[in-house]
Image (cartoon, rainbow, N blue to C red; front, side, top):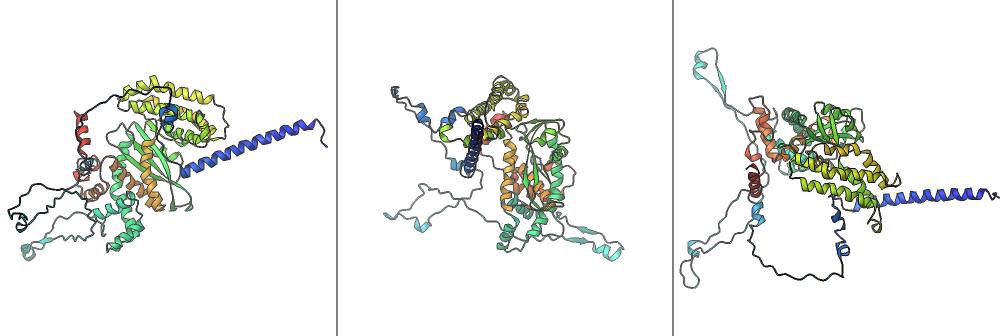
Length: 523
């Protein structure tokens, strides 16, 4: 039998154990709700201003049956019929007109046998697809010699007709064939084994090994010099974005096929007229990799919360408010619907939403004016947000507790956005550039060799940079593989996406309204 004095101690121990188990159950419930939301819930990360949080229960929130109905006022107006959007969407395409007519014998009136005349036309538009066609081009180079020298001289001069240099010597590869393989894999996300099957359906036996060799050779021989030139221009900028994502390489020295390697990504910010997006393959996630790539860069660097960027010298890291907001969105997802209104997670999202709402209002301002507005209005709200977080009393291991800890831990870098009016609250610009690679990775799954991963980084860089500057990837790659091997000068700037040598056929068609607005801005 326990003594009477020991029973209070036993009860206290049991109460503590019950509290621990209740906290553990609550933690597991949060994780279960969060996992269910990630699997079945919407994935949109669109920010919300406070008013938008009550969008779906607007009727319940706004209703007041005691208020009288407003008096009706009838308003009449006329509206000019606008030009159909379909015509604008097709304006940049080549058009062909097929006229359906009656023969002279058929142009007879069925009533009086008089002649018929054209009184109008019915027009129907169709989109016609012309499938890709594979053909063989035989380049025959004529070689000339002199008959007189052949008969009378010891030396016979040989003159050859001009012929363009091949993209790969001793290969069937043409600029268009290599551009097609790269575009299919890195834009359309079609792995080489699928392309191999498609070539076979076209009547061509082209192995995936051959296509892989084409990609590696052309990326190394012709695209790498452009990549290096773009890197030099990128590092001369004052504001950059950086991010990294995993990639699997099967045959990498010193690593198992299941281990992760990384594709690092760097790009220009929104303050530039010409955009540059560069991928770099590295075997790991060490901070030494961005140190080496950004060795000549001095300025602001937009990143997520990864600590590897914080050790860069001469670089001011600017944190991403969207990454931080996601933590509170996860905290909101695990709260039962009845407890969401007035919760700390909802208030955190509302406070952050006010900052993004202000940025939307100021996006058309000049950087100097935006900088002043931020210091006057936005920065005090941000400081009040962090001060409010410090007053919260939440469990450290809960989703809300981890979100609060992350935000306070990243406060130094998040507040750096107020140092310059050209900086942005989020790192979404580079995350949008990562998505094409992530989508392709879901299809081709892995890289076979290190050379393949490095070549993929170069090709992705050229394609995404071309897209960011309004170029069509296939046409631009075809132009590069035809022009660079035959270039007579050492300058590379003319071949860059904004270079003078890039033909007009490589550029995306500009819609009429966009061109009109661009003309107004120039004026």
